Length: 107
Image (cartoon, rainbow, N blue to C red; front, side, top):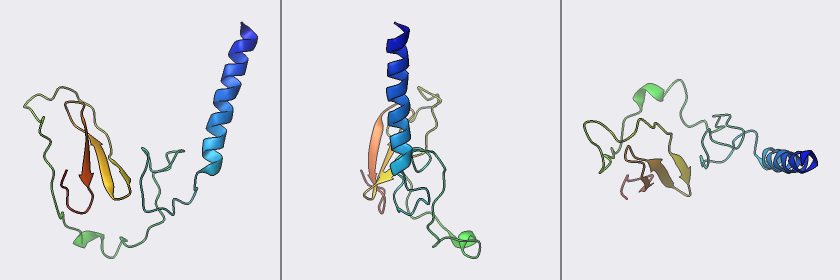
């Protein structure tokens, strides 16, 4: 039984190591495909169009209101959206997943 547990743990560790090995440590992609930006969760992006000299000029271009907003949300879940191929995926207070066009905010 113990040998089986070690084997399963070993496979899990190997899978995790392989995931980190193929991850781009510099975050050079414009996408944010997983929580934290990359499998190790570095929350780093090498993109440099927004910097200290222009960050104060940023303005919202669209706002999205979830259909299931209530006075008292069904959950207190707070999640960062992920972005893949220009689509933002987010979780609503009612624990639904929504996909939005990143450029327009439309579903």
